[in-house]
Length: 236
Length: 262
Image (cartoon, rainbow over all chains, first blue to last red; front, side):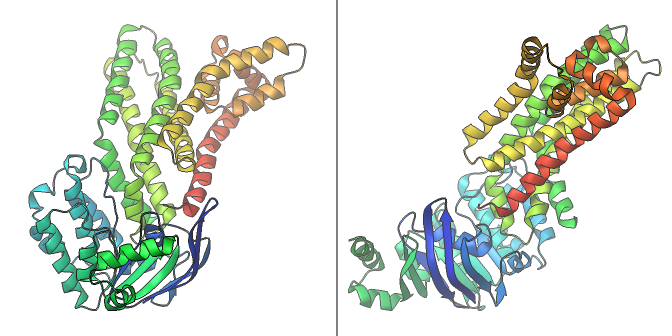
């Protein structure tokens, strides 16, 4: 469980997160949606410790994360943009992460096969395409048996085959009581995967609840319509 | 420490495979070859090499360090999501960039000396050159990292790096001349010592020239330095401040890195 209380983040004068309170439940897929610049990535990065909050408290499974880095053994993260040192290979990067993490690598072999990546493992990153690097990110995130996943627009660069494999992977992991936090602009994907939806606008949570609640709330039948309706309504 | 070493070994691998490091080594190899093979006096070759080192190493280290750290931005983000503390990561990247660059210089310089140098047992000069070159690499990569983590805009950061080089390697001597010319009626010793301390390139030059007792090439700051401190203390003091030029930017950058948002 992730508990966020009064989370505040200012970049210079701009307030990106405005005293956010949020509880992310274990064993659920929570999707964070909202327009560009609404603070989705800032929120995820704050929980990861990449961004230092201006105020507030974040607890992961009851552990305060400030000044702590051991808790990240529990976390698998897939960033929005994948870029790695030009001259290293995917194999080397994997073994670096393996050395840093406490948990054993239980899945990378299988995932490499499923993502059809065997032939790319020994190539330096500068020769790999964006989508392939994205797959490497996915493998790193999923291999070390984490309890909580953070996926920042995970399918944005993936081809349809990998993307649907990836979604199946999420659903499979979910049955093992894993927690997912995901951002996406693809509403069909959110509809397919998410149990809980958090709608973020200008650094504030405007809605939190299940998909059904959201649809009922907005009297729309499609999530995309419902979200679009909320964005325009809240902007007025 | 353990975590830093893990990061370090991978970054070293990455840096060693970059083309620039290889080109850099060959550059020093050919320059060294030209000077050692065709000059009868090893000391003269050393002095020429010294002048080249003073220009090239700061420039290449500043630019290489900046570009490397800017390009590592997403890698840093990804690594910071792993169980690693920020200090280990930052120092791992710092040493992972500076060690290969320093090695590439040292190897490029030492090989032609061994192969073509007319040494007659005069190893001292080349050893001091190598040591100074290595220290300057560490100094200027530390400075470039300091600039880079304080400036998120890549173009500006590179601009500042080049500006620092221009100031310390080129304009500095002009400023010293102007000061001497316009303020010749005043006692300038203390000011000159202060000025040489704020320039690591000048410190390295003074160290080299005191060691070899080449007062003709010493310049004003060097002469003041030697007269003020004498040979031995002069060497100790200039080495001390040169090392401070590695440590201070590194400590300041590490501190800033620990608070920075990615």
